[in-house]
Length: 389
Length: 140
Image (cartoon, rainbow over all chains, first blue to last red; front, side, top):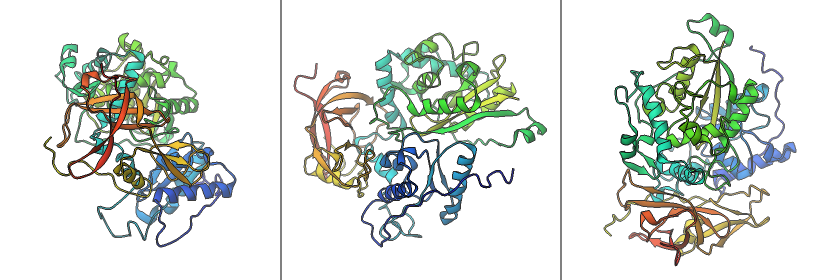
C-alpha cells in the first residue's frame, strides 16, 4: 500500500498572479487569476476542474472559487490545516483523489493579501473580508440569520411546485420520532409525536415548524476507517465501504443556492448519487435502508428523488405510503436521526449506517444488505454506501 | 418604529462587493455585468464564469420583479427586526435573482409570482439597502 501513489499523478500546470505589497483586489480574485493561469499553462479549460484543495487559513472557499472561474461539478473539495505546513499536503490530497479516480483535474491553491490584508500573527482584527463572509452578508442584513431561514426558501418552492403538504413533513418527523422510542440515546426517547402535536407546533420559518428542525446537541461521534482486510480481523462485523463521494455543482452556494435554474431539486445530491452508484455498481433498488441527512424534514423528501428512489415530485407519495417506516420500502434514520436522536452534524447518521449493516440497530429492519448515508443538504455534500461483508 | 441605532449586521466591504453597497447608498439596485460578454451576475464576483474576463461594470436594475420563492420568519426573533418578517427571492426583470425583504404587505398576502417593486430602505443610522413592496395592483 505504501507505494500505491507512486507515479500516479503529475503537476501539469502552474499559475501565478502578480506579486505586490498591495494587490488592490480580493483574495478571491487572486485565487481565480492564479487558477485561470494554471489552466492556461496546462491547456485545460477551468470547466474541466473537478477538485479544489487549499489551506484552512485560506479565506477563499472552494465553491466560491469554482463559481468564479466557471467550474462545473466538483468531486473533491478540502482544506488542509496548520499554516504553511499545508502546502505539500494539498498536493497529497490531490494525488490521492487522482490516483483513485475520485477526481480528474484538481487545483491546489493559496491566495493571500499577506501584506495589505491580514498579516501573519495579526490575529483577529475585526476588519477581515473573506469570500465566505461576503457570501453571508447578502442575507445577514435582511435578518436571514439561521439555517431554517435559508432552507425555508427552497422548501417552500419545492412544496409549492409539487403539492407537498405540512402533513407530509409531519410524516417524516413522526416516522423518525417513532424510531427514537427504541433508542435510549435519543433526546426524544419516551416522547412520541402525534400529527396533532406536529401541526400545533410553533411555526418557525414558513413552511417549517418546530418539529421540522433537528436537535441542537452537545456530543461527539468518531468513525474508524481501516482496510477491509484489517477490519475482518477486528471485533465487529465490518461495514464495507462500497462507494463514497463528495459532490458540488455549478452555482453551488452554502445554504443559499438561489441563483441557479433549479430551486426545487438538489443537483449536488443528484451528482453524489450518480457518483456513489457508479463506484459501487449498485442502484437505488439495491439499497435496503438509509440515513438521509435530516437537518430538516423537507430535505428527506427531496433526497428520495435525488437518489432515484422515486421520480421528481414523487417523494411525498413514498412518504404517504409509509416508505420510511421499519416495514416500508426504505427504513430511514432508524436511530431517530438528527431530528430525534441528536445533531452531531451527520456523523451519528454514519454510525447508524454501520449499525444497520452489522444488524445491531435499535430498530433493525429485516435483511439489510446495503445502506445509503448522505451528508448535509443545501451545501457541497457527499454520499456513502455501506455493505455487508 | 423604535429601532436601535445599529442593530443591522453590516456587510464587510471588500473589493468584490463594496461597490454594490455604495450604489445602494446612492439609491440604486445594481447588477454586475461582464464588459466582454455582457453576462449579468449576482451576487457579484471578480471574474466572469462564462468568459473569464476580469473586466466588469454594472447596470441599474429597473426594480421590477416577481417573487420566485419566499419564507415568513417567526422565530427566533432578533433585536431590531419586526416579525413576522417576510423574506423573498425576487426574479428581477433583467434576469438575475435577488434576496430581499418584502414590506408594506401582510404576511398572509404574499404569493408565488407576485409582482414587486424595489424601494430603498434607510435605517436610522443612514445605512441603505434595497427592499421590495407589492407592485401597484399586486396585493389582494
